[in-house]
Length: 191
Image 1 (cartoon, rainbow, N blue to C red):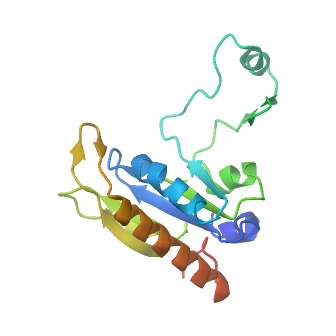
Image 2: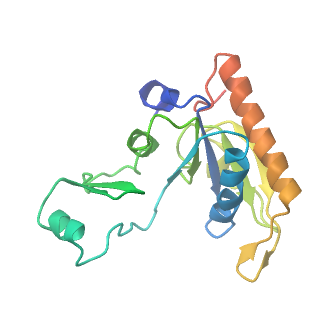
């Protein structure tokens, strides 16, 4: 998508920034730490995740899953704490899923969205690399690189991220988003 901002990115006050990197480098681990760091600053943050291998969002046998399997084009599932909508996409797409579709599904009350994956989209991005890795060209080419983060080696199964590092990165991301907005550019477009 050539211009995410023109479609739905502009409805988020601070825009959209991608978190990209090789599989297993720690994107989700970083987001698990960044989301509360940004929320603690009073920013209403959402997340969009690209599921490269597909996913099953509902549990087989549950009523909502049965309705979807019966052919409903969309099923809304709501409780006192959450709402979820399962909507069919055209499975014959030859292009990767569009970030704009994920952003359109998020509530407009968010200030900011962190997009995990979506390396092909023209959005500013934080590029993660492993301890012995160099940034891959596909992570550098499609959008402005806000910063490149060398992830520490994983202890057990996840990289350990010092709190000061996460707080500093949250500040850098917000500064970039605010600067892009105040200069008339968008945090959801390459500079």
